[in-house]
Amino acid sequence: MKIKILDEKFDPWQEIVEFKRNELQNNSNIGASSVFLGTVRDFNDDETVESLFLEHYPDMTEKYLSKIVEDAIKKHKIFDGLVIHRVGELKPTDPIVIVATWSEHRDSAFDATRDIMEALKSEAPFWKKESNEKGFRWVQQDKQATVDNVET
Amino acid sequence: MNICVRYFASIKDDMGIGIANIQVNDDMTVGKLFEQLTADKPYSGIVLMAVNHEYVNSSYKLKDGDEVAYFPPVTGG
Image 1 (cartoon, one colour):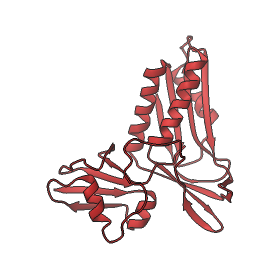
Image 2: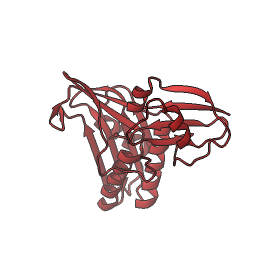
Image 3: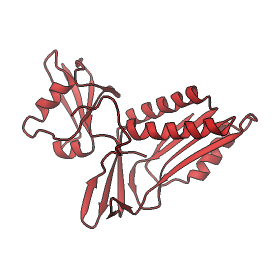
């Protein structure tokens, strides 16, 4: 398992190749690799996005991402998982996040990648702030992403 | 007891600071503390609470040395 929080632009495909080469090269039981890549759009809710700032809570972020990937490894019996997430200043088309998993068969890799991504969106302490010529705004959470212990 | 309080995202903007070391009375809960800290300017949005990097609910009783964090719903990914 590998969790990385980066404050500068990265090449997601290079990261996947390196992880596979370094951590999984001798695993001939791998039959499926699944990857989700999230990138910055230049619009959101009909507003232009010129840049995006990603804030996070150091230590808690790594703790929850590790827990999320460990849960997916146990639940879906995948061989391994990789999560890389950007923080800091991003521009449209920049990669924000990659989630990659490796398993024997496609179902477990697809399911594990989706579960990790959905849990990340509801639990991992990151916050997006979008900017354009009018100013900035903190992005609101998707309705799908919720946690049980929300206080109002 | 001594507590470290951290704020993130829009709550940090509202509070005007990101981190503070404060003294609180025994039997203080994480929810009650937030009410006290925002008494002058009540926060109207949803707030999530964490202690020592774990989500907690508002009834969690604080202990000396705890690190408390208050933040809005997360929007990563």
